[in-house]
Image (tube, rainbow, N blue to C red):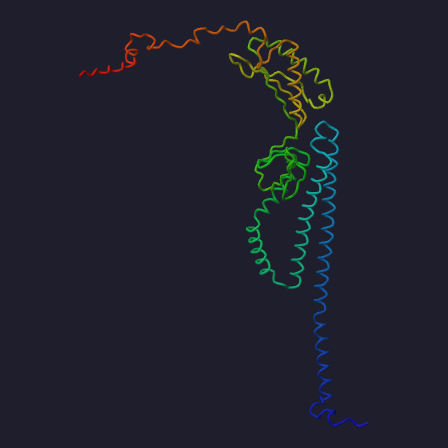
Length: 360
């Protein structure tokens, strides 16, 4: 079937077959020559990049395993002292877990960032990419982010050092200046506290300037007793000693008392009273309960021994009271009481004038 004339290509549109084949052969020859000249370089760069990635992965895995073993060793050393008197309070299970997780997370993140960042820079250098503009841009961006998020960086660094130095942990009762209470969560940026009234405080780690940990070591219970100056000090010491011995043998005070109850001596001597100071070393956080129990027992023991505590009047002191002066209720004499005194004469009523009589 003959093609229509309109569909047949023009003679000018038909390419020269020998010229097209020749150009294709030249292109293929140039590509093959280019590949032949550069394949060794490409293979070298690829192997170098592969070697960098493999070495970075191996180093990262080894560092993470070493950090994990270090954290486990820290937990093991903490468990070794858990059976002692201080160990159960200073290193409880939740505190160890959170502290280990936080330290491990920080160290693993820092190690991964350093290793992978160094590997990425080495890969870019292997690809013949100029790193000077990239590093300069990264430096400027880092400075800008540092100024804009300096509070966040301060909170993060403060949290890292608090956790590393074990300044406090979960279950500790602390005074952080801006707030106080029991630590219920320790983070890298925020520490969560529960106050005495049940409120929850979220305290940024960068705002904590000083920390008073009330749960580490031991606490002191102090009781001040005011008695009359006429009481015998030896008798007071003997009664307090009996109270301390009895309290130290009863549960749960035998565990809460970490030392003998001592009479420190006279804290204050006045004309009407003297203050005897009693002190005891207690379990952390239990000093208030020990103080209340000591006051209760000392009051009962003093009542039984006849030692009067200042605050009430004994029955025998009523006879020693001085009778009231009967003249105290009499008013002072007045100058108006004397009718001949100038004051009385001046205050006398003026007589009425006499009415004149009219005569016719």
